Length: 283
Image (cartoon, rainbow, N blue to C red):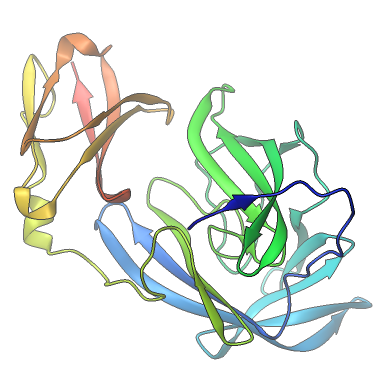
């Protein structure tokens, strides 16, 4: 996505997110299956009054969901009728340095991997035919170290994770593939279509293997050429990024002397998309 930066000396009107002429396509990536397991379409139709508050009704793939949302003074509230709880989902009034804690937001639930978030940048950018406020957020683990996680809230669109924020953990994450406004489609997150292909051949995924595991001396991570793997990341058990490198061969040596004893995760990527996540032990 090409982004142009502008500075303005005037305050432009706030662009609402929860409009009936808006539509979101969201892809779900499963780390352990190594593929997109589903792509859902979200849109709003109609309203419902709950406890004196008027909510927009969210539809998922054409069926009414349990999720209701309302928007007031730049703040988006999420209400799940199955549990009867309202939470602040996105606040476009935050300022740089504000700390955020993730909560439960329908329609995508919650992540649970990252302990806290900090607003690190606020800009105005030309996106999807409009000048929009963009809020950049960085994630931190439970001891306050950066988690190598960044998220973007875009005025008039919502989270680039897929309408609701913070949907990330070791099992899955969500990404907005495209946003539609009055029938015009805008692609995001490097997708070339609203509905990317689902899944990767299981046999090839099973060929991504670290031998031996646990790592006692030097182990070999086998990376089949057919998958086009081009990047490797390794995290410790808390989720802290330990190493990151470009892959140019069909294998990678993991040396026990480079790590303290304990549990680790590796992630392999193709074109900035995670192919597989798995655990290993260093003795």
